[in-house]
Image (cartoon, rainbow, N blue to C red; front, side, top):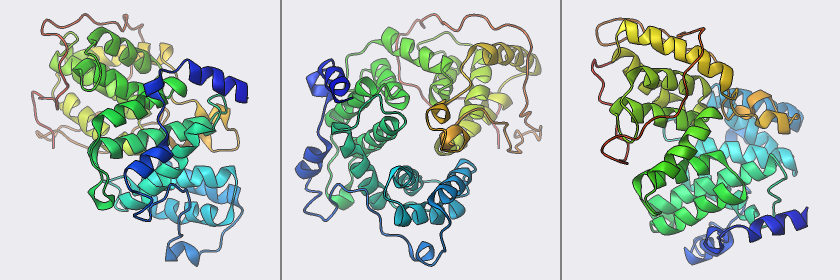
Length: 359
């Protein structure tokens, strides 16, 4: 295992590997009392909650997390963090940090989230990339730390450092083959932010992730097709892709992707929606079924609470009162996914300008 780890790291560009512990020291985090550790002090509510077995509580927490019922997930994860010292605590800390970092969830605590993510990300120096799913959790924690590094974190004296953030994302994408990091790198290549501008390479990776049912990539490519940027203008394909993205989205991405599906649906005509349904039917037969982390971690609930195919459950209408059809379906083969480059070359994606507003 160790030999495998060393050999893979030797193939990684030197600048792609960054010591998270060194990053913490350089940022003065240790002096501020936020040392890189994955220990969290349970909230008072969890401190009085009788815990069942760690396995049962982890399962309860993940099931609640998948449904965005954070008020149930939080005490369950805190029970596991308090009672377990092994792999279950490792998972609980990660998903607890995700809740704390979710600005839309009502329980945001970025200082707590960063401390947890930092502690998990520091394991990147020792975890074997082939030790899945542990390595993927570490990689996702590296992604989260990179986000804080890119934006900065004034509360703890962390200044924005886009260059360092790119190094961290590249480490996660290359060493751990992490899809979210690959998605971020692909977008950077499409816009030339922090990496060489290479629209063809960026689009290649976006399309690969789309076929692997990565919800963010599906939504991103849908947006490009909706606006005709980098790829051909195609509202039918955009609607089909955003519908699949909404089905595959995990809790952290669900709201904005469903908002985009609403906008695209309300911005298309009935005939376009029928064509999109046909595309969806074909895409479902050739695309992966969504995140397959559950197959590498049978001790965890299905889909690992990270995403995976699900039926849409929202009830929305367009501005004209028309209800949004959540169940677009089709039954004919889809044409090839590859799209021609747009005449204007690569441009950063922008919020969709729909032809009929939704409410």
